[in-house]
Image 1 (spheres, rainbow, N blue to C red):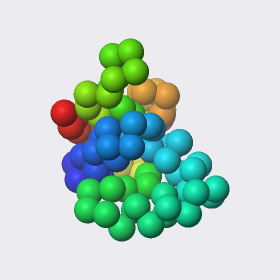
Image 2: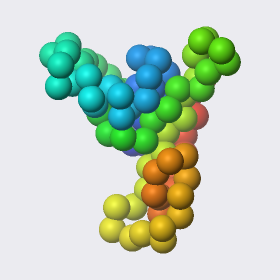
Image 3: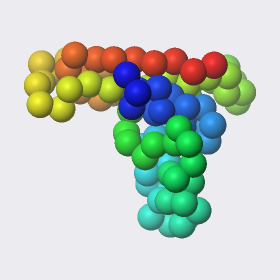
Image 4: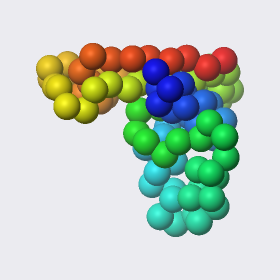
Length: 87
């Protein structure tokens, strides 16, 4: 649950998916430094919740890496999913 919450927080705070946040780490050193901030995490699975261009929350998905059912959810394969929403 903690990883899902932090993914949601990161997506909401930076107004981008955590996958995009991770990609920016390669070209923007500040992104790597930002992962030391409280609640920020650089793991795929966080998506901002938007209405138009306004971000009003985030959702994070996290699951058990050792067991896969092949369930597709939010563009990511997940097993025994845990979701957290920040707003």
